[in-house]
Image (cartoon, rainbow, N blue to C red):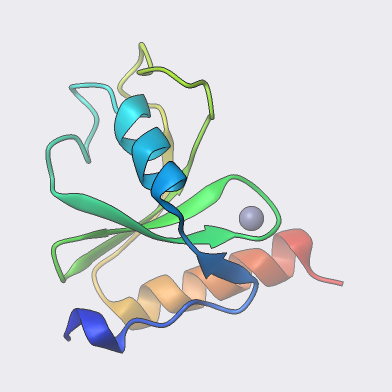
Length: 103
Ligand SMILES: [Zn+2]
């Protein structure tokens, strides 16, 4: 799958540079996504979850803490879902938005 195929899930919006900056700032050196060339591609409309693309084959739904600093614990920011396909990531993201923030 090419990066161009990626759309924004329902209930999400495109990420801003601030999200990328905060995401990278929070990552502990031992975090699973640290140093992985990860890019924040979408942001949940209802909470602080972001969708992170690592390369072209792995997707993570990560809950940012907005602490403004590197977390002291490698468990944070929490990875809430890990997907190896965009279809899985999209399904998870839209289900999250519906279940957590839906009408
Ligand atoms: Zn959310």
